[in-house]
Length: 507
Image (tube, rainbow, N blue to C red; front, side, top):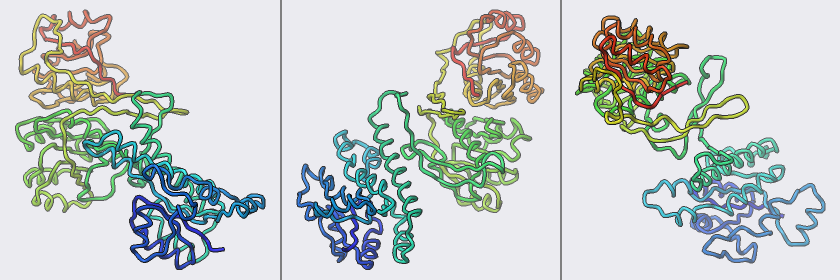
């Protein structure tokens, strides 16, 4: 009895070459619809599934392979005498190879203007059913879902070395594929932000050399349905592959720069901003970011939301940087920067928006899921409890600093002046300690600057040391039982304070 292969694919990449290889190995090919036409046009003899089942395709193609002759041929155990007897009695031919990939569900709902009916019609039923049946029977059946596996699978068949171990690997890939497919469908239909079962899927972008430390293993996966500004969408123009820590830092830079619409430069080190500058031009913005902390930027990451020209590239080339990210580099800028072997250059469209998505944090035995911190505060949202009111220039700097402090590890304090960070205190166990670090970094630049705090002041000590250092205005959430103490301290030193009514913890 000839061996039989069932081929029915949506993605027809290299399918004719694979089918020809099977025919050369004396496989009988059965197929459906467009795949059948593709094979016959290529001169490959193939039989329609409906001729095998004696049951025509129906319901506009919704039912093609959902038939006992197909699924008995897939699910029957070759070493089970009773199964083989039943196949013989029913005239069922075993199927030895299954090559199936699925309707383009993701590509369909990604299209603009697509209707729900069109999306539903691209939910594959027969394909996943055949794949799962064949994968369950991997002991006897070879199942291929990925065109990238055609060459190796065919070579193994030709050399008669495709054993159970290899078939199991192919089966595992099938179950991952169908799980991802179902996950995307479930996501499309699910309106509840936190349903009773939360399923997510990611596609491997690259294997990383190691994780946070050399003894840890790691890989980078991308969200197949995410098209917003992200590293997964970036084009690397130069340099080594990104490391685990590079990706973490670069992502932090992108999250920060997404807060600002004007020309902005951000320098990041260990996922905290060491300098942020906003100006009328990107070169001036970088000057502000660099001067904010010219020490910590060493070995850091710089992101700019405007094109990098040769002048800026020359300045960047004089600093040891891991990564530079921008929406565009001029040819002259690339000529300068690519002379540096170890710098990574990423090109990515910059969008000034905070899109809502879910952040997942694994904990032992589970995962925490929350919406990202995309909330914004504008001038009209502020309340002013102090006697002194901030000037328009101070309001501008306060809102600038408020956007920055949102991206600094808690407890967080940011000092700013003239749309430039001048001091950052990050990740401290108490707020006055974070303020002390920011003020020490700022030194004389603290005079005339404003201060942002990611959470309220439980005591007035932070306000007091800020006022003594020359801070003129403070922005904080408010809401402490001892808010009045901080208000009184501001009034004592004649500085203003505004409340946002919102905190920005970042653990």
